[in-house]
Amino acid sequence: LTVCMGPLGVGAQRRGTDSSGRRYNRIQHGQCSYTFLLPENDGNCREGAAEPHSTNALQRDAPQVEQEFSTQKIQRLEHVMENYTQWLQKIENYIQDNMKNEMVQIQQNAVQNHTATMLEIGTNLLSQTAEQTRKLTDVETQVLNQTTRLEIQLLENSLSTNKLEKQLLVQMNEISKLFEKNRFLENKVLEMEDRHRLELETLRTEKVTFQNLVGRQSNIIQELEKQLSKATSNNSILQKQQLDLAEMVHNLINLQTQKVGFLFKGDKADEEKKFRDCADIYNAGFNKSGVYNININNMSETKKVYCNMDVAGGGWTVIQHREDGSVDFHRIWKEYKMGFGSLSGEHWLGNEFVFLLTNQREYSLRIELTDWDGNQAFSQYDRFHIGNEKQNYRLFLKSHSGTAGKQSSMVIHGANFSTKDADNDNCICKCALMLTGGWWFDACGPSNLNGMYYSLGQNLGRLNGIKWHYFKGPSYSLRATTMMIRPLDF
Ligand SMILES: *[C@@H]1O[C@H](CO)[C@@H](O)[C@H](O)[C@H]1NC(C)=O
Ligand SMILES: *[C@@H]1O[C@H](CO)[C@@H](O)[C@H](O)[C@H]1NC(C)=O
Ligand SMILES: *[C@@H]1O[C@H](CO)[C@@H](O)[C@H](O)[C@H]1NC(C)=O
Ligand SMILES: *[C@@H]1O[C@H](CO)[C@@H](O)[C@H](O)[C@H]1NC(C)=O
Ligand SMILES: *[C@@H]1O[C@H](CO)[C@@H](O)[C@H](O)[C@H]1NC(C)=O
Ligand SMILES: *[C@@H]1O[C@H](CO)[C@@H](O)[C@H](O)[C@H]1NC(C)=O
Ligand SMILES: CC(=O)N[C@H]1CO[C@H](CO)[C@@H](O)[C@@H]1O
Image (cartoon, rainbow, N blue to C red; front, top):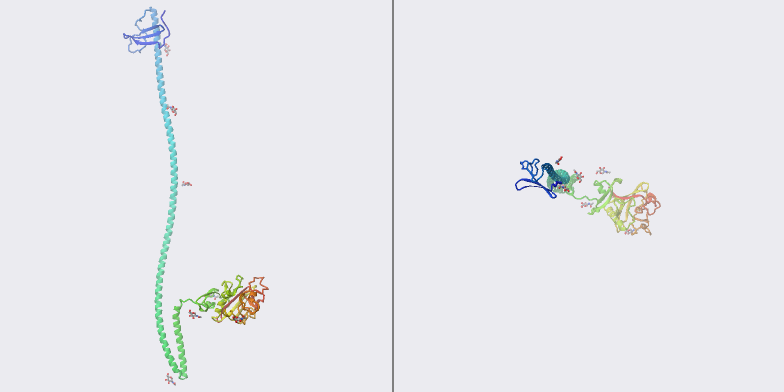
């Protein structure tokens, strides 16, 4: 057979419809081409599928056997075709399915990606939000902390303010109380002033009446005196009467002066009291030793003096005192004139003041001495005064007594005062330079209470020490001395 047979490829197959409307299937293989006319389709068959039992005659001249064989082959080919077609369809389906799956997967991936990104963004946002929230919370807590602190401070402030207010109230209350007290006191003072004024007025009127009375009384007295002078010429009986009358008059006068004195005393009470010396001060009721003001000779200017109110009845005005050597006594005339040292300690009152003092009335002098064994002794002179500066403050003494020697250690017949720059002694030497200090040196005499101060152990064998010959000998320097004066009639 020269029938061209060969493997059939799909690409070499061609289908179509001929001019008469019959469908065909043409297969090209090499030089051979085969055209199959396909039976009429009943409508259910698929296009391109060959009918296995076609009654249509082939447009080919071939014997019957060959025809049958060909028909078989065609049928097989048709099957194969169909199989292919099915395969193709299957593959198509498969591909389509796959495509669908992939699309779905891609979409899913995309969605997942989106979701993931969204989630990521979401988580990012969430974490950022969380961060922000944390920060906000921190800020909030800080703000709260500050607020609480401020509130606490506010509370404390208000508490202290309350306290202050309370204190203020208390103070105000006290102030108002004080005000009330003040007003009360003022009222009282006003009342007292009124009363005082009234009393003063009554006193004044009384004074006037008393003055009138006094005038009348003196008139009567004058008359009585006249009668008396007349009666004087009468007899002794009359003389006796006169005496009686005189006594009566005297009594009357006393009574009047007492009354008037009493009245005038009130007016004088405002005047400051003046003391001539410590005796006056003592008599005025001051019995404590110490520094006081006096007015020597009743002068207006005051002088401070130390008053000893303890020794021998008190009332002593101290003019010299030594006790510890704290003050230098080797000084010049001018200093001895005006005084030096400390009144409550060692001092010299001053010759000028002693002169003024001892010439306003009669004074006695007392000298207190203490040795280094604690023994005390004194010398007293009933009369003591000194002259003025022109008289070189000359010493006048009378009547020595006391325990510091039977004889007076001060020259009783008197001596002028000498200092290192004023030599008024009875020696060709200069006693004040030799023995130091200022004193009533004779030549040079048995005493010098203004000599050098020597402490215990150095006080023996000293010619220029604090000397009181008839107490401790010529070369013993004493531990303490006091010279003080008091009116003779104290
Ligand atoms: C068609 O395909 C099936 C498998 O899918 C196969 O078993 C059968 O033999 C095939 N038919 C022909 C005619 O090739
Ligand atoms: C998903 O995201 C990754 C990276 O984020 C990217 O590489 C991938 O192409 C994305 N896929 C789709 C389907 O968008
Ligand atoms: C407030 O803050 C301070 C430090 O800044 C801290 O010591 C204190 O304990 C805080 N107080 C409260 C009530 O948080
Ligand atoms: C001093 O005076 C007061 C009263 O003025 C008196 O009580 C006292 O006893 C006196 N002292 C001496 C030592 O006289
Ligand atoms: C002292 O002066 C007053 C007046 O100031 C006088 O009344 C008094 O008598 C005077 N006393 C003596 C002691 O001079
Ligand atoms: C003492 O002083 C008086 C008065 O200045 C003088 O007349 C007299 O001579 C003096 N006596 C001696 C011893 O210096
Ligand atoms: C006796 C005598 O001389 N008597 C006379 C006393 O004084 C009065 C006058 O006050 C005379 O009248 C008396 O004669």
